[in-house]
Image 1 (cartoon, one colour):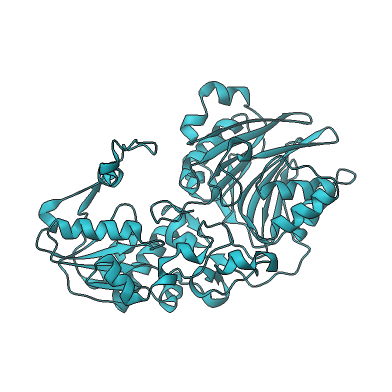
Image 2 (cartoon, rainbow, N blue to C red; image 1 turned 135 degrees about the vertical axis):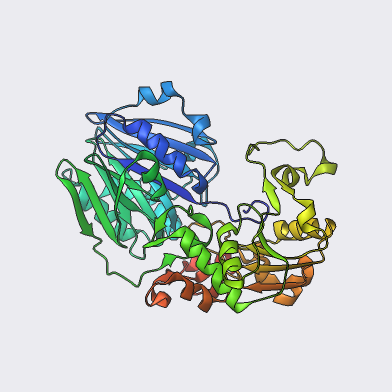
Length: 470
């Protein structure tokens, strides 16, 4: 599902090897990654032989962990997770990291992504006696891992488990001995980076978490790479399976990642500005000013304004003190949640021609409300420019729009959508313009564009064909 027509975030992972303040640093790392998931969070710590201690909860990081909670699990090596469910129910038992016991030893995993063959693997494992405690696909990896865990060879077990799963995954594994292992799928869909903090190695979904804990960014993991962090330092190995073309998720640049992060070799802020520049070249229009709706499209709007020479204005002001659990007072005020978060600068809008820059339109509900609000405030004309191509196909790799029925661009033509939204003009950035803005050599063979063009790098299994197409 999507909320108010906006794609919900995926998940974020963090890990640190043997630090006296491992739990607290992981807490701060998750705080920096909160934008990637707001349903649940958890931290697991290996601080005694053969044991892993965990604390998990539903909600935001600062609501789940107290100082006392962190003291109870302090020391050793740690991994953490913030979650938005793309598979599995939003319940506490599905909160990660997920921990298992095998022959007296504990292991924990935190996962960002989506296994497209999870249902097949789960059926096979259950036929062979495995008992699942959750409904999330991440548990499948741990079952495969322990099944291949012979003579304590952790690395071999990780390799064999990774060879069985298909889809998008960047995950961190914690062993009871304190080893921290990072695994990235052969396509490289999701970001995962390696950092160093005073001799202690750190893994994170995004580099913005390194900045908060004052760790040095070392490098990003390569597609198909497995890094083992232990007393010997960092060891890097590759998956056993052949390496396909890279399929980095370009929507990480457009929407998911924080603008102060560097992913796939580029700073996200600068990438979004370049998307806005491409938009201005493709779809110029005369107007009084360019504006975003905070924080959607902020940086693309800056790029559009700079390239077009049209002034940039913040004509909507965001209230930063609105909690996610704000209660709407009555049904008759069903738009209250929108109005309490954003308030217009009326003098800027009245009798003006405006260009709105959005990063995406999924269901169109939010976009329609925003256009109506501007017209109601006396805007003369409203033009909309979208800093990515239209979403016409579902994503099966960890972004939560899983059916075509949720995607308004799959149901309406450009002109139909313009009329539906009440716009004077509408333009989506072309795929060619998006790829050119990336600045990557041979972008056609580096990025996944399945949600735009329907070309899936990892085919959806035939038993899911109905879900894939509808």
